[in-house]
Image (cartoon, rainbow, N blue to C red):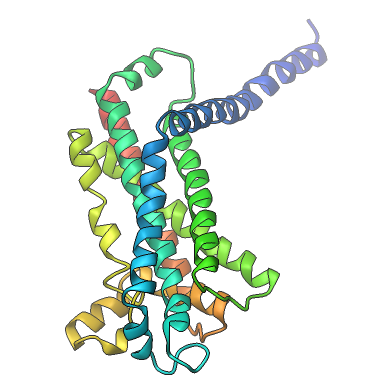
Length: 284
């Protein structure tokens, strides 16, 4: 065989090998995504609960506390400081509650996979191993975006009146997608870390509390100093302030940069932790 024919044969052999992992990654991740979407359709009560809780809280805060809480705002977004202004104020916090609520469902799904033996079965198959986790992340992000759309629809019905342009809506959606991606990877890691589904369902609970301990429902200026310091420097406050500024035209300041930095840090930490736990469990 000549040198030219040997080189041609080598190229023909290498190209499929180089392309094959990418093809398998996309195909296997899509398969795992379909699996998680089917699970969502199979358990609609779980999805309904995760969407229903933020909606119920929004109705509670707007119609029960809205008049009093709105009067405490600094003039409100329209200068009246009433129930309508409070509805505008709390929607970013409710949207973050929607994101963190789905984190509990993600952690629970991952823990169920790890304890029911399906992961062991997947490992005997010729699939791209990380696609199992990537499928959970992609499926959860789709669920969260559907939930966010439902919450915004209800918010518009109860008096939420954003003045954002189309570009600002897209930017707000991008911020929500970033924090959803970050929180989802963290919840995947928590699901892998948990010893049982019951533990996994409770592990993300601190994430659910963070919007309450930030600027989600009252301005941080109204809080006592120790609480205010925590509220101003915790991860979700700059995210909520960025969304509020984009949708309602309030000042954003450095919140957008801080929100992006927090999203990157949480996503990276969650991904690295999840990968380490998944590989450790595989070695066992």
